[in-house]
Figure 1 (spheres, one colour):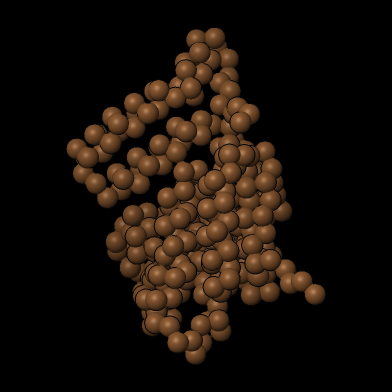
Figure 2: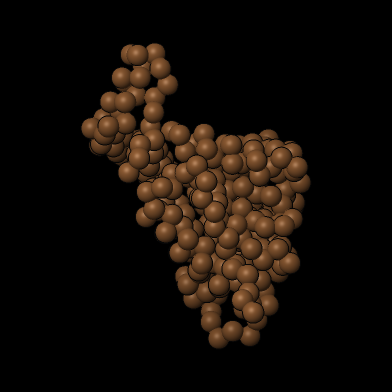
Length: 261
Protein backbone atom coordinates (compact mmCIF):
# COMPACT_ATOMS: atom_id res chain seq x y z
CA UNK A 1 0.00 0.00 0.00
CA UNK A 2 1.44 3.32 -1.13
CA UNK A 3 1.46 6.08 1.47
CA UNK A 4 0.32 9.59 0.66
CA UNK A 5 3.10 11.96 -0.50
CA UNK A 6 4.10 14.54 2.10
CA UNK A 7 3.92 17.30 -0.54
CA UNK A 8 1.07 17.51 -3.03
CA UNK A 9 1.76 19.41 -6.24
CA UNK A 10 -0.63 20.94 -8.75
CA UNK A 11 -0.04 23.40 -11.60
CA UNK A 12 -2.80 25.54 -13.08
CA UNK A 13 -2.58 28.72 -15.15
CA UNK A 14 1.12 29.15 -14.40
CA UNK A 15 0.59 28.68 -10.64
CA UNK A 16 2.35 25.76 -8.93
CA UNK A 17 0.61 24.95 -5.64
CA UNK A 18 2.63 22.92 -3.14
CA UNK A 19 0.53 21.58 -0.27
CA UNK A 20 2.06 20.29 2.96
CA UNK A 21 0.28 16.98 3.38
CA UNK A 22 0.36 15.72 6.95
CA UNK A 23 -3.10 16.96 7.94
CA UNK A 24 -3.45 14.52 10.86
CA UNK A 25 -0.41 16.29 12.44
CA UNK A 26 -1.46 19.82 11.42
CA UNK A 27 1.33 19.46 8.84
CA UNK A 28 4.02 19.33 11.51
CA UNK A 29 7.34 19.07 9.73
CA UNK A 30 9.49 15.98 9.57
CA UNK A 31 12.64 15.49 7.50
CA UNK A 32 10.72 13.94 4.62
CA UNK A 33 8.39 16.94 4.33
CA UNK A 34 11.14 19.55 4.59
CA UNK A 35 13.44 17.88 2.08
CA UNK A 36 10.58 17.19 -0.34
CA UNK A 37 9.38 20.80 -0.18
CA UNK A 38 12.89 22.05 -0.92
CA UNK A 39 13.15 19.76 -3.94
CA UNK A 40 9.69 20.80 -5.17
CA UNK A 41 10.70 24.45 -4.98
CA UNK A 42 13.85 23.74 -7.00
CA UNK A 43 11.80 21.86 -9.58
CA UNK A 44 9.37 24.79 -9.83
CA UNK A 45 12.32 27.14 -10.37
CA UNK A 46 13.48 25.03 -13.32
CA UNK A 47 10.02 24.64 -14.90
CA UNK A 48 9.30 27.41 -17.45
CA UNK A 49 5.58 26.71 -17.19
CA UNK A 50 5.61 27.80 -13.53
CA UNK A 51 5.44 31.55 -12.98
CA UNK A 52 4.25 31.67 -9.34
CA UNK A 53 4.57 29.19 -6.46
CA UNK A 54 1.98 28.85 -3.68
CA UNK A 55 2.84 27.02 -0.45
CA UNK A 56 -0.13 26.00 1.70
CA UNK A 57 -1.30 23.25 4.03
CA UNK A 58 -3.78 20.39 3.79
CA UNK A 59 -6.64 20.20 6.27
CA UNK A 60 -7.08 22.77 9.02
CA UNK A 61 -3.43 23.63 9.69
CA UNK A 62 -0.72 25.40 7.73
CA UNK A 63 2.27 24.00 9.63
CA UNK A 64 2.45 23.29 13.36
CA UNK A 65 6.24 23.49 13.36
CA UNK A 66 8.68 20.69 14.02
CA UNK A 67 7.28 17.23 14.64
CA UNK A 68 9.08 16.61 17.93
CA UNK A 69 8.50 12.89 17.71
CA UNK A 70 10.52 12.80 14.49
CA UNK A 71 13.67 14.12 16.19
CA UNK A 72 13.28 12.54 19.62
CA UNK A 73 16.31 10.44 20.48
CA UNK A 74 18.07 11.24 17.22
CA UNK A 75 21.86 11.35 17.19
CA UNK A 76 22.00 14.83 15.62
CA UNK A 77 22.63 18.24 17.15
CA UNK A 78 20.15 21.10 16.81
CA UNK A 79 22.62 22.90 14.53
CA UNK A 80 23.07 19.87 12.30
CA UNK A 81 19.30 19.40 12.05
CA UNK A 82 18.69 23.02 11.04
CA UNK A 83 21.52 23.00 8.51
CA UNK A 84 20.19 19.77 7.00
CA UNK A 85 16.51 20.71 6.71
CA UNK A 86 15.09 24.13 7.55
CA UNK A 87 17.95 26.39 6.50
CA UNK A 88 18.27 25.00 2.96
CA UNK A 89 14.48 25.24 2.62
CA UNK A 90 14.29 28.91 3.65
CA UNK A 91 17.32 29.82 1.52
CA UNK A 92 15.80 28.09 -1.49
CA UNK A 93 12.44 29.79 -1.02
CA UNK A 94 13.89 33.26 -0.54
CA UNK A 95 16.29 32.83 -3.46
CA UNK A 96 13.65 31.51 -5.85
CA UNK A 97 13.50 33.61 -8.99
CA UNK A 98 9.71 33.49 -8.99
CA UNK A 99 7.14 34.98 -6.61
CA UNK A 100 6.28 32.72 -3.68
CA UNK A 101 2.90 33.04 -1.97
CA UNK A 102 2.51 31.50 1.46
CA UNK A 103 -1.20 30.74 1.80
CA UNK A 104 -1.76 30.34 5.53
CA UNK A 105 -4.93 28.28 5.87
CA UNK A 106 -4.65 27.53 9.60
CA UNK A 107 -2.24 27.57 12.50
CA UNK A 108 1.39 28.44 11.73
CA UNK A 109 3.51 27.68 14.79
CA UNK A 110 7.23 27.59 15.49
CA UNK A 111 9.14 26.88 12.31
CA UNK A 112 5.75 26.90 10.58
CA UNK A 113 5.49 30.57 11.53
CA UNK A 114 8.89 31.16 9.93
CA UNK A 115 7.67 29.46 6.76
CA UNK A 116 4.49 31.53 6.78
CA UNK A 117 6.49 34.76 7.00
CA UNK A 118 9.01 33.78 4.32
CA UNK A 119 6.77 34.32 1.29
CA UNK A 120 6.94 37.31 -1.02
CA UNK A 121 3.19 37.57 -0.52
CA UNK A 122 1.38 36.22 2.56
CA UNK A 123 -2.34 35.44 2.21
CA UNK A 124 -4.29 34.30 5.27
CA UNK A 125 -7.59 32.57 5.88
CA UNK A 126 -9.82 34.20 8.49
CA UNK A 127 -9.23 31.31 10.90
CA UNK A 128 -5.43 31.33 10.48
CA UNK A 129 -3.12 32.19 13.34
CA UNK A 130 0.60 32.48 14.04
CA UNK A 131 2.51 31.70 17.20
CA UNK A 132 6.24 31.86 17.86
CA UNK A 133 6.00 28.92 20.22
CA UNK A 134 9.73 28.27 20.75
CA UNK A 135 9.97 29.79 24.24
CA UNK A 136 7.34 27.36 25.50
CA UNK A 137 9.97 24.63 25.19
CA UNK A 138 12.88 26.95 26.06
CA UNK A 139 14.27 27.19 22.53
CA UNK A 140 15.26 30.11 20.27
CA UNK A 141 13.15 31.06 17.23
CA UNK A 142 14.78 29.65 14.11
CA UNK A 143 14.23 29.02 10.40
CA UNK A 144 14.44 32.76 9.75
CA UNK A 145 11.94 34.07 12.32
CA UNK A 146 14.54 36.31 14.01
CA UNK A 147 15.19 37.86 10.58
CA UNK A 148 11.64 38.13 9.23
CA UNK A 149 9.61 39.16 12.26
CA UNK A 150 11.52 42.22 13.55
CA UNK A 151 11.68 43.60 10.01
CA UNK A 152 7.90 43.44 9.90
CA UNK A 153 6.88 44.55 13.40
CA UNK A 154 10.05 46.03 14.94
CA UNK A 155 12.42 44.61 17.54
CA UNK A 156 10.30 45.18 20.63
CA UNK A 157 7.02 43.71 19.35
CA UNK A 158 8.95 40.78 17.84
CA UNK A 159 10.64 40.10 21.18
CA UNK A 160 7.31 40.23 23.00
CA UNK A 161 5.68 37.80 20.57
CA UNK A 162 8.62 35.45 20.92
CA UNK A 163 9.10 35.76 24.67
CA UNK A 164 5.43 35.33 25.59
CA UNK A 165 4.52 33.00 22.70
CA UNK A 166 1.45 35.12 22.01
CA UNK A 167 -0.96 33.88 19.36
CA UNK A 168 -1.68 36.37 16.54
CA UNK A 169 -5.03 36.03 14.77
CA UNK A 170 -5.73 37.06 11.19
CA UNK A 171 -7.12 40.50 12.03
CA UNK A 172 -4.06 41.37 14.11
CA UNK A 173 -1.72 39.87 11.51
CA UNK A 174 -3.15 42.16 8.86
CA UNK A 175 -2.80 45.17 11.15
CA UNK A 176 0.82 44.28 12.00
CA UNK A 177 1.78 43.65 8.38
CA UNK A 178 2.31 39.91 8.76
CA UNK A 179 0.05 39.31 5.76
CA UNK A 180 -1.22 41.23 2.76
CA UNK A 181 -4.78 39.86 2.54
CA UNK A 182 -7.25 37.94 4.71
CA UNK A 183 -9.98 35.91 3.01
CA UNK A 184 -13.02 34.01 4.33
CA UNK A 185 -12.30 30.36 5.09
CA UNK A 186 -14.92 29.02 2.70
CA UNK A 187 -13.49 30.87 -0.33
CA UNK A 188 -9.84 30.93 0.73
CA UNK A 189 -8.36 28.52 -1.82
CA UNK A 190 -10.25 30.10 -4.72
CA UNK A 191 -9.13 33.59 -3.63
CA UNK A 192 -5.51 32.41 -3.35
CA UNK A 193 -5.60 30.90 -6.84
CA UNK A 194 -7.12 34.06 -8.31
CA UNK A 195 -4.50 36.25 -6.60
CA UNK A 196 -1.66 33.99 -7.76
CA UNK A 197 -2.97 34.05 -11.32
CA UNK A 198 -2.85 37.86 -11.20
CA UNK A 199 0.82 37.59 -10.23
CA UNK A 200 1.42 35.01 -12.96
CA UNK A 201 0.18 37.49 -15.57
CA UNK A 202 2.77 40.08 -14.53
CA UNK A 203 6.24 40.36 -16.16
CA UNK A 204 8.13 37.34 -14.80
CA UNK A 205 11.63 38.60 -15.61
CA UNK A 206 10.99 42.00 -14.07
CA UNK A 207 9.56 40.41 -10.92
CA UNK A 208 12.59 38.12 -10.64
CA UNK A 209 14.87 41.17 -10.74
CA UNK A 210 12.60 43.06 -8.32
CA UNK A 211 12.89 40.21 -5.83
CA UNK A 212 16.69 40.26 -6.21
CA UNK A 213 16.75 44.02 -5.62
CA UNK A 214 14.58 43.84 -2.51
CA UNK A 215 16.53 40.93 -1.00
CA UNK A 216 19.79 42.82 -1.49
CA UNK A 217 18.38 46.11 -0.19
CA UNK A 218 17.20 44.46 3.05
CA UNK A 219 20.80 44.09 4.20
CA UNK A 220 22.62 46.76 2.18
CA UNK A 221 23.21 50.49 2.23
CA UNK A 222 21.37 53.10 0.17
CA UNK A 223 24.40 53.52 -2.09
CA UNK A 224 24.55 49.78 -2.67
CA UNK A 225 20.82 49.70 -3.43
CA UNK A 226 21.15 52.54 -5.97
CA UNK A 227 24.02 50.80 -7.74
CA UNK A 228 22.20 47.46 -7.73
CA UNK A 229 19.01 49.05 -9.09
CA UNK A 230 20.97 50.62 -11.94
CA UNK A 231 22.49 47.26 -12.92
CA UNK A 232 19.20 45.42 -12.72
CA UNK A 233 17.33 48.15 -14.56
CA UNK A 234 19.61 47.62 -17.55
CA UNK A 235 18.79 43.91 -17.52
CA UNK A 236 15.08 44.72 -17.35
CA UNK A 237 15.29 47.35 -20.07
CA UNK A 238 17.03 44.94 -22.45
CA UNK A 239 14.33 42.27 -22.01
CA UNK A 240 11.39 41.80 -24.38
CA UNK A 241 8.96 42.42 -21.51
CA UNK A 242 9.97 46.07 -21.39
CA UNK A 243 9.38 46.52 -25.11
CA UNK A 244 5.98 44.86 -24.77
CA UNK A 245 5.06 47.11 -21.83
CA UNK A 246 5.99 50.29 -23.69
CA UNK A 247 4.26 49.14 -26.89
CA UNK A 248 1.08 48.28 -24.98
CA UNK A 249 1.15 51.62 -23.17
CA UNK A 250 1.42 53.53 -26.45
CA UNK A 251 -1.34 51.43 -28.00
CA UNK A 252 -3.53 51.88 -24.92
CA UNK A 253 -3.98 48.15 -24.46
CA UNK A 254 -3.16 45.71 -21.70
CA UNK A 255 0.37 44.26 -21.97
CA UNK A 256 0.77 40.56 -22.64
CA UNK A 257 3.66 39.31 -20.53
CA UNK A 258 3.00 35.58 -20.95
CA UNK A 259 4.56 33.94 -23.99
CA UNK A 260 4.59 30.31 -25.01
CA UNK A 261 8.08 28.81 -24.59
